[in-house]
Length: 58
Image 1 (cartoon, one colour):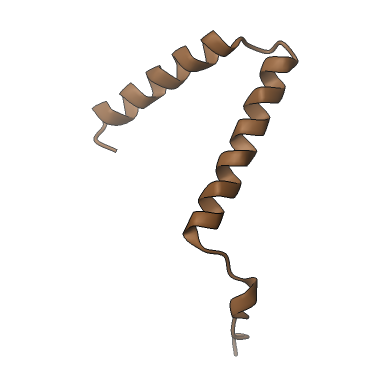
Image 2: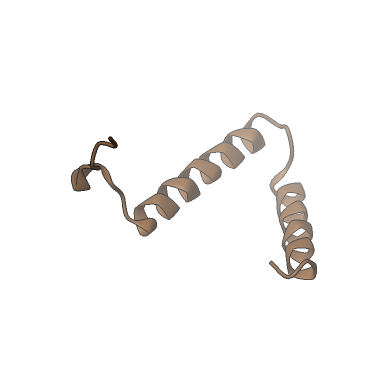
């Protein structure tokens, strides 16, 4: 039988979204600092990906 979840172990959607945003932000900042790509290249790619998502109806 499954063990019931402890409500204190659960996180809200807002907490999950914030944690994910911080993780992505930190990863991108580190990649820019290490010279893998520039901030301008990142924003250009971000705009491209956003447009692709909109074209697909996401």
